[in-house]
Amino acid sequence: RVHRHVHRHVRLYQRMSASMSACLIGSVAGVRAVAKAKTASTKTASTSSARATIRAHSAGHGHGEMAAGGGAATAQGGHGHGHGGMMSDRRPGEKKGFVEEMRFVAMKLHTREQAPKEGKAEPAKEAKPMMQWQPTKEGYLRFLVESKAVYDAMEQIVASGASPMYGDFVDTGLERAEVLAADIEWFCQTYEMTAPVADGPGAEYAQFLKELSTTAPPEFICHFYNVYFAHSAGGRMIGRKVSEMILDDKELGFYKWEKPGGLEAQMTRTKAKLNDAAEKWSREEKDRCLEETGKSFELSGKLLRLIA
Image (tube, rainbow, N blue to C red; front, side, top):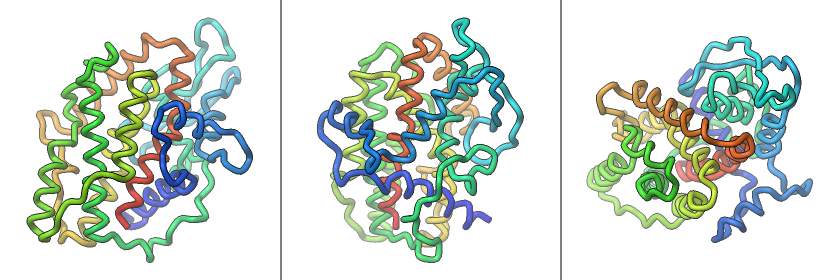
C-alpha cells in the first residue's frame, strides 16, 4: 500500500511539473506572466483547475472536507457561507478558516485516484510507471541540496521583515534548512560523494520566492503553506520509500520534527497563524493567494523529479 501511495504522490508532482518551461524567467513579472498565459496550448491543467475551484459561485454549494494536516482523511459534507453579505462570494472551506480554503484548492489538483472524494485533475500521460521509477543516490542528493535552497529562502524571507505578517512565521518548528544541512553532510560522508551546487530548480524556486515575497505577500504565503504542509504528508511517504530503496532504511532528519509537541503541535500552531494572517486580507488578496496554488505545485514538482 505504501508503494502504491508513494507512486500516487510522485505521479502528482510529475504531472504538475511536466508542462513547466525549461527555465524560469528571472523577474517576478516575467514568471507570473508566463504562469497566467491563457492560450489553449500552454495553459496548464493545474492553473485552470485552481481558478475554476476558487471562482465557483453557487448558493448552498456543498463540498467534501478532509481533516487538515495532509494525507488521507475522512470526508464530511460541508457548505460554503456568505462573505461580506454577498451570497455569490462563498468559497469552499471559508467557514473553517483560510487554511481550509487553501487545502480545498490543493486537493482539487489531485487526481481521483489520489483523492477519490475531492480530486479533479486528469492523470498525467507523462507519468512514469512505478516499476520504472528508480531513485538514485546522485539524484536524491541533488534533491536534498536543491530543497535546502528553497527552505533557506523561506526562512530568510520570514526573518526579513519584508512584510509585517512574516514575523509570525519565524521559528514555527517546521523549518527544514538546518536538518537538511546535516543530512547532506551525512550523505556525502557515508557514500563518499560531493554535494553539488544548488543551481537548478531549487535555486530557481528560491529566487522566485524572494522576488514574490517583496511584491505579493499573500501569494508567498500560498507557497509557504504548500511547501511545508505537503512535505509533512506526501513528502514523508516518498522519503520513506526512497530510504527503503537506496538508503538501507536510514531515516533522514528531513523527515523528523523533534521540537516539543512534535509535528502535529507545530502544524496546529502554524495553521492558526495562517488563519490569523488571512483575516487581515481582502477577498481579492485571498483569491490571489489561492490562485498561486498551481504554481506552487509546478515548482515543487520540478524538485521531486530530480530523485529518479
